Structure formats: C-alpha cells, structure tokens
Length: 288
Image (tube, rainbow, N blue to C red):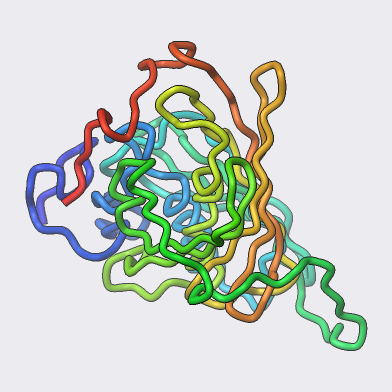
C-alpha cells in the first residue's frame, strides 16, 4: 500500500489495520494512527515505539535468555511515518548479553534502547516478591483516558483505575486490541512493553494543558517474564521544585507483579515549552 513520508498511515483517510505499525521491508516500518502520540499529532507515542524496538531485537537475535532490563532514551521527537530499526550486540555472552536497538528516521535517531538478557536458571526455591498485588481489572471502574489525552494511541486503549486514585498516585490496568505489527504476533515481553510508557499519563499531577511533563526516558526492570494481556500499574508521580520529575510504577500481569518502570520527566509550566500549552480539548486530533 502507498505510504506518505512523515505521516501516520491513516492520516489522509486511507484504511489502516488494527496494529501500531505496518512492516514495509526487512527492517523498515510505517506508523499507523494507532501509534499517534498524545503531546503532538505528528509524533509517535513512546509506548508502542519502545515495544517495537524490543520486538525487533528479539526477532533478529532469538535466544532462550530472558529480558531483564529495557532502557530507552528518547533523543528527539519520534516522528510519524516511515523509519528503520537497527539492532546490534554490544556485549555478547553465553549467560549474559547486552543488545542495543535504535529507531532511525533517515540519518536521525529518535530512540536508543539497551536490553539486558540473562540466562534462565531454577530459582523457585528462593523466589519472593515484596510488591503488593493489584486488585483485578474487573474490580476497577473504567477510566476514560481520552478525557485528558488526545492521540490515536490513547484512543486504542481500554483502561481501568481504582476508585481511590488521586493526582500523582493510583492503581490502574490497561490493554489494547492493537498488535505491534500488522499480521505478526507480539513477542510476550514486547507485547507487554508496548503499554508501559503510558504510566506517565495515568495519574497526572497537573492537567497537561497547563503543565508539560513529558518523559525523556523509560527504564523497565523485570524479575520474571510477563504474560500478554492486561498490564497493571501501581504508579506514583513526583514533581520537584526546579523542573525535574519522576514517574515510578510497579508493573503487573494477570499473575501478579513482574517488575518496575521509571520515567524521568522534564516539567515546564505554562508557555515554557515548545508550542505552548494545548489541552486535550484544543489539541488537533487525528483519531479515526
């Protein structure tokens, strides 16, 4: 199908699949409107983008080792449209390895991820988890995230949140009907990862129209490999006095906690950010 450079597939009203991306070559993809970011209509959301970067690393470098950590640095706007994923082994090893994977738009890199994979061993005799389990999704009321955020990615989500949630603190569950790549099954950890960056928008301390608090990174640590399906978040958001912030979440799947996620935030008030404040009501929306 024809692809418009620097535009989400579906931008011009053409049909697009229930997937965040369409593969256009061995290492090339185009984003669909389902991948559209929440801050600007012409960008991708880091959540599906980070999931795809991990999925490509796993696809190209198959292994029986387990994903232990995924750390993504955002080097600039994750533009919509066509892009390439590059993958390389930084530190090879029989039991421990480090992989680097990047999203590249021409000669500009938007995401650089480093992925630790560790050998599986039997530690059932010493396992223990200190994080508290979440109530199941059906025990929480629906959360209308599109009341706060625009963009096609947010529109693809089904969200639930505990009734005791407050600005800066809350427990939530998310899932989506969209696969990462049209016609391809999600690798389990990457399929889980594709929702994790949403944490920063779940229990916002301030309305995004008046305060800008985008994250510049995402780091996920896992102590077991998660199942596909609902992704659970026990989230805390902290803003400091001088423009820094952090979102921290304990992550869960249907079997309980699986690890943690942290996001470093750049916090700017009022007009003190590129483009000025745009509320969900006034932000251009390109959802179907």
